[in-house]
Length: 266
Image (cartoon, rainbow, N blue to C red; front, side):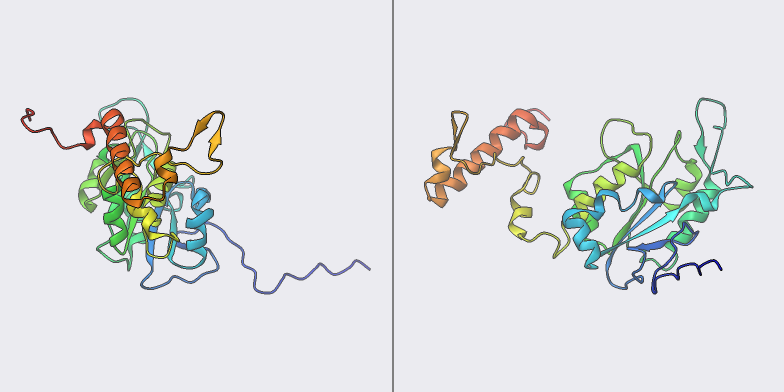
């Protein structure tokens, strides 16, 4: 007589993409009052990705923030759940349909705080930076749309007031990597994510400058020594050295971050 099939472990769930946005980690209920990242994507399996590791991953497990992923494909048209179509007026590539994206956005944003920015990853968007990350961290959360193909039908952008944001002056195959980078930059600013709040205040861009050089043990390596001032114990001198180095690096690498010199033409 064949043996009975092994019983399922109690409490386990089958996880599959569904139309409604899912809170990640999947076993956790949606939490009120917790900073929320919503992601609309054709590749829900890409999340949380690296956001599930290290400090952001620990904060996710400790419910300092929550992640809700909406599978765009489930809102597609027809048997094959098509989400795109050819560009009006001709041209290469495909364009994400307004009706498909509209259904996904409305599902993701249902019940969401209207103060959450609604953002699409786009190389033609406003550049993402530390100031934007700080702004998002002060909000209840953010909704990110990960585009693909040649872009999004402009009517959807206009109808929902979607802000386009760019990670940089380059083009990716999709918005998922950019979304993870932006969320990492934002989540780490939430209270309780980093162990040392001072590290946020001292790092690059926090005061408009690049960060000063960092050193640690050993005191000498390959004939290169840690600058004596950092070993002096004179905290005022150390602060002055770090400020001077930050200004030097910023002037050499990112002069656009510095205010214009007196008398310099606009």
